[in-house]
Image (cartoon, rainbow, N blue to C red; front, side, top):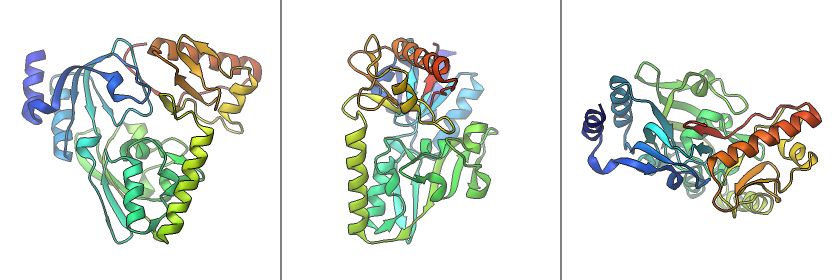
Length: 303
């Protein structure tokens, strides 16, 4: 099966875009993770469709990743096919007040295009370290803005292997969720509607938000961003701080001293250490405050 799967994947893409035994720590912002058996990088909607079809035909497990900014990969890696929708699939362009972009385009790149075109409304996303695809899946947001404020439609690969476009009103966008997440669709591209604005004002706001992020978040360390979802009526970071867990460590996995909502890789942390730390933090917060912390970070592989 392995040789057959490799042949089919290289036929769907090309040899240089199918890697074997690829270290996933190279592809996550945590800088953690063992090897994926297969690591593929499609460039088009059709290539994603063909790759997923090959995995299904060969009954090979597969997982979609972007730039790995919200991902903890097991130390044992992933026994299957990692389909990366990132730099190879990152075209984006503005036309009028709309921006259409492939799912692998970074939010920073899209914010830059909006700035060049004098379009406002996307400043909130400029510092979010993910891709458009991931942002659509989880309705990413920051500083009072969310993807639901700007999305017009999202083109996905559905569970039947069809490429379909879903209008905003059918995306079921909520706090860190969407119909895409619920049904396991694969985001291929999306269209955004922004407003005409003053480029200087847009740049000023983006710079202000960048300064806020830099001063409050531990951007100097590898991490996966906010580790836990915001519990209703609370802030995860405040609960963790009040539980006396600022700087709490398991090996090189550590609760950031700068912002307790972040778990950082303070050296050579393993996935097992991060996983253990997250569980202990959740247990302590539950015991002290009766509040359940749900991970925002996605796990890939066996833990």
